[in-house]
Each structure stands twice: as structure tokens, then as C-alpha cells.
Length: 503
Length: 114
Image (cartoon, rainbow over all chains, first blue to last red; front, side):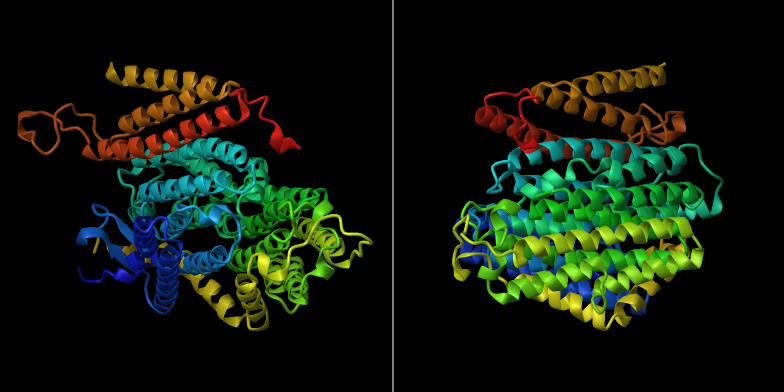
């Protein structure tokens, strides 16, 4: 059992254990909350420790049962997956804190918190797995639990949206399985490191290109990139607020992570073609997401559309593909998770104070002045950060993207991306005007008191992380640089996994 | 011969599954899914590294028999469990939808469009 780090196991499976224990205490809400909180906090702490270990040294590996890869199943935390894992566990912890103080009826449901924890297990499992088939299993855990969470939403339309998503995601699962079995037929293994080792030495096998197409389209479908986006606004808008906050911010990053992993580790030959597709899809997505967000009249739906646009920026970064652009894409993905979840929680706590609970502009128009000023401050900071105004962290990520675009001299895509980035500013200001700057003569809806709605604690935590990462961006940039340095040399990953007989 | 039969079966199941998936009736669409998952399972089986017929691990390789690939069978077993889980969730949701909206015609489920 040498060279096997149990921290990886704790990061992935502490929430699983927490979910099982919480299921035993079904019906006792306080106990469930404490168990889940401790589990989520453990996952957060160990993911941070893993990030330090993986960045300072070599990738950390956990071998199930002590068997060496490729015969045993392994979990690998190199600095890319550790960075994404910290992002996921931080946002999930904040989402958990929000759901503790959430006044939705569905939070009282005995399976809500266990399902939330199962979703975190699936999510972090996707980031840490070193095995394609295990990736599929974790992704299914994530999809099934998130579908159940949306189906029990307070919003009556949640069931229909969840059904729609389950259909679409089942098609994505089919594509993923096709890709995985094509990879197995080609390489005779499912271990990522083993495939990469065979690719380094051997010639191009027959089915690898087909597998690349299947896997890429499955990942694009999971992260709601432009032509596969149609399920996303419905599914995310009808979700309960804490679930929406994690769906729109970290769950869509699974596909991004998968694409980065694939094009750097496995498909270096197909990478130029995949990149050019991603670049086009990214720019169309930025336009489409911004346009959709401008033309909708629902606060939560606006933020769901905005996610399509922001994922577009990340894809543009991956599409340029230089080391700086990949760093920018990782920084963007990391920052966007915090901004978007914080904004969604603020929108959720605004809408939880309306009497028919909704984020429709007809109902929340002019609601802002009646709320305590901290809500406005949070929304303003988050909105400016999303639009990329200094000194917030959104500015850092936009700056990194623009800088990498200048470096590769891709002037036309850069111009299009920056131009459509102004759409972000427009729709954030539009919401600000509607909610906080409009003075209504007579109130259309009844507004509840401050204590009757959702708590303001979780968005305060997330926004302060955003402000901190904007003022002191050096650590994040350094971590992203290390991650790119590691993934651009596949042999670091392969050596760390220490394949059986491979030395 | 068995290769061609497997390929034909995968293709047939895919064709029927996609056809059922595109129908308006949600129950038929859900059935299409179970067909599609079975097509994928057969495809995984065909993706095995060596296509022997003898049982793995117990066969004496020296007498000329090729063992079958045990890993694809383990994969199919996992895929069956996972797809069964999502299929039962799908059917359960069709059940609730049919009770709540009194229809399983997907054209009549248009509340989200408003």
C-alpha cells in the first residue's frame, strides 16, 4: 500500500458516507444537517490538502485494494483535478450552508440532503477518477441525484424539466458509453494513464478518432455548450435555489474538465480539430447566452442563460490552446464557479421573499429598496465581477483570456468575444435597474420580512472569496500555471500512476 | 458468422431504439431507451479484446481454446445496473407525469413554454 494517498479517497467518499448516515437519520432534520455539514467540511478540507500536495509535489494516487493500475481502479489527484476539486467542494459546501437556511419546502424532504451529498460524490469523483469507466459511473450518480433534486422542487414545472434533462442526459450517457467501449476496443484498457502510455509509443489505432468524437460530444452535452444547450435554462431555472447554484456553477464544469483532460492527455493528434470546433462553438455560445439573458424576464433564467455565455469564454480559451490560453481557461472556470453560485443565491434569497415564490421580473421589480442594503451590495459586487470590472475576480479571468488572445494573435475571435462580453454588462445592469433602482408607487406583491426568507450567509462567504481572489489573484494564477505545466507533460501523470510493469 | 450477427443485432436495436425514442408517447420513448442501452451493452461485448467462447480463468489455454474477455462482461454488468437505475427513475417520472397532467403525449406537456 505504499505511495497510496488516502486523502483522495476521503475527498471523494466522505460525502458518500455522510449521505448514507444521513439516510439512516431520515426524518430528523437537525441530525441530518449536522452529519452532512461535517461530511461536506471534511471533503473541503481534504481537497485543499490535496491541492497543496499535488501542486508542491507529484500527483497523488489512491489505489483501491492496493492493486496497481491498470488492473486496479485508481483515483488520481494531479494539480488540474485538485484545482477543480477544490472549486467543487467549496461551492458545494456553500450550497449546503445555503440549503440549511433555505425556507423551501423541498429542503425538509428527508432525501434532499442525502441526494445533495450524493451529487457532490459524483461531482468530485468525476474530477478525481483515473479511469474512463469509473468516470461514467460517477457521472451517472451525479445526473440521477440532480434529476431527483430538481423533480422534487417547489416549482411545479420542476418535474417536466427534470424529465426532459433525464432524457437528454441519457443520450449523453449513450454517447459516453459508445466512446468508452471504442476506447477499450482500441487500447485494451480503460485506464487514462495506460492509454496515454500506449499513445506515446504506438501508432494511431483505428477507432481512436471515433472515440474522440463520441466523448467530446458527450462532454459538450453535459456542460450545455451552445448546440446542446436547449435543456439547460429550463432544468436550472426550475431547480431549488441551492441546487441551481451548484448546477450552474460547478456541475457544468465536468464537461470542461473532461475536454481539457482528453485533449491534453489522450488525443493530441485530434486536438487541433477539436480545438477549432470548440473555438467556434464558444464564440457562438457567448453571443447566444448573452442574447438569451438579455431577452428573458426571469432572474434565475437570466443567470442560467448567462452560464451558456460564460462557458463559451472557457471554450474559447481551450480553443486557442496555447499554455497561456489554457491557464486563462482554468482561471476563468474557477472564478466563474464562485461568481455564478453567489449571484444565484442572491437571486434565490430575493425571490424567496416574494409571496408567490418566483424570480419573475414582474414580481421582483422594485423589491430591492425594501430589502436590507447588504443584498444590493452583494448583487452589485457579483454582477460587476461577472461583467469583468476591476478589482473583482471576474476582471482577472477576462484579462487572462484577452491576454492569451493577444498572444496567439487571434484578432477576429478576440474582438467577437470581447464585444459580446459587453452583453454581460448590459444584462447585469438591466437586472440591477429592475430590482434595485425601480421605485414602485404601490407594491404588486407582498414582501416577507427579512427573517422569513433564505439566509444571506452563504452568498456573503462566496462574494468575499470573489473579492479576495480579485484583490490577491497571484495564488490562483500560480496554481493554474502549475496545472497547465503538469498537463502539458503527460509523462508526469503516467509516472505518478506507476503502472504495473511500467516502472 | 457470430460477428456479423452481433453487428446486425446492434444495428437493429439502435434503429428500433432511436425510432421509439423519437415518438411522442413518453412510455414508448422510455422503452426506446431500454432498447438503446441493450444495443450499447452488445456493442461493449463486441469490443472485447479476444473473442473466445470458453469460460475465462478456468480454461486450459494449451488445448487450443481461447478464453472470452472477462472485463467486458464486468463492464456490461455495471452498465446494466446503472442503466436500470436511470430507466426506473425515467419510468417513475412518467408515472407521476401521467397522473399529474393526465397525458403521456409529449406535445401536450407544454407548461414550460410559457
